[in-house]
Image 1 (cartoon, rainbow, N blue to C red):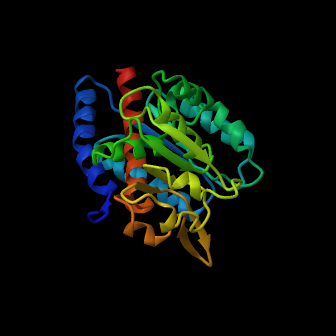
Image 2: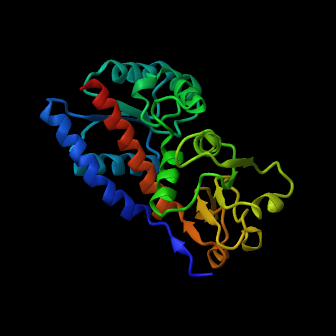
Length: 285
């Protein structure tokens, strides 16, 4: 078996930016300026960093950046009022409410107020339904980014066995739905596992592709992975002030392809976010 190929999401995103800039230019030629909005509540350093990164990408791509920063003391009505302003603002083609939001605010209730057609994350219940049905709509950013990354590196998906560990609404469940659709670059047999499964080893050993999104440190070990399999790491947990991944480092000695969360999945998530934003702008223009 050859050396493990690291799936470099940063380099793929750099390539995709060429096409994204061309789409932005085409929209501007028709008088449409694509706009991405973000609503940040409170002063969480990680959330502020993520939002800043998205707006730096806006500047690189020529996408208008619309931002509203609400204080941590804001109430539910104030948050929902900001959401309604973004829903009504024609300059905002797509937007997100950066999570987590402060305690005392209802995440679910807020997310339901987002216009599904402006839902850049693709996680509104209407868009989750569209995904399950395989109909057009913004697709969840991290799952779509993972799929695009695998395709770019020519990792076979169709007809393979995929094990997704983690049943979260952001990655696990939508990724399982996406890769099981009867369409190109999907059509896989998908097994969805979680930390309630006593022994995940027998399932993982049968997988051609493993996606770890459980937020459980070291849940995937080298002796679980089929030699040559593709392993995608998305789950991390803070332990003693440091991020500890779901996948043990030794897995790279066995895997054929490996996607680390920061180098690979993070950039591809942002790439999908801009795909959704520009698709919304193109519908407008």
